[in-house]
Length: 251
Ligand code: PXP
Image (cartoon, rainbow, N blue to C red):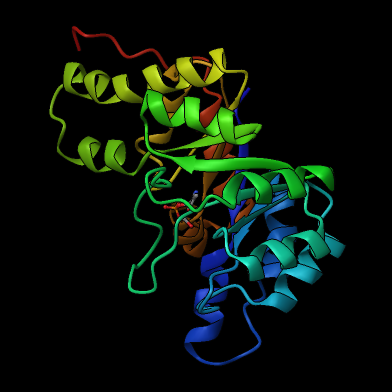
């Protein structure tokens, strides 16, 4: 079974667009849970463009499922995570100008402090995951740094799926994710996926070996506008665990 982590950042985006107190990401998390969310994910960005500090505190206190707290590996964010003590922390790269997280961690650029930060979070009992590109070397590096899980960036796969015309092309797009997942598993890392997944491409994650968790936000929040959040979550969870899904090259 692939667990579904529901990212509720964009509920806060809508709230902040008008400077109102609604819609509340905390209330959204409760509705996502009703739909079967296995965890709630939120990203506290340096510029606080969507989720704010108070949201994180309230989420931690009110949700019944684990909190996956996405942050950049900065001193400020690691301090907030250490105080909040979420179930898991996913470390992501962050650029001010980007619309959303654009790539996995660049291990050529990560600071020497990263290993210490991972250890300090782990010492508090927090599961540490690193958001990485689908690249075997990144899996080995993640393990060396002390991470327990990796979240493989699915953005490139998702963009490719928009243009893929045949099942063979779709299957080929999965190859880097499958290879990276295999290496991650061999390293003893939990395999998560996320970014850009939607109602037409998420079911393919079942073909990524050892995939335990998918973190999905934008597509679920967008669909929730029409069918409601619990239903949008239910539909995504069903897609991720659709035992009938079996693409064949001939189709
Ligand atoms: N995983 C990570 C590490 C992310 O940064 C994001 C975007 O915040 C997501 C998953 C969710 O991506 P999307 O909103 O495209 O589903």
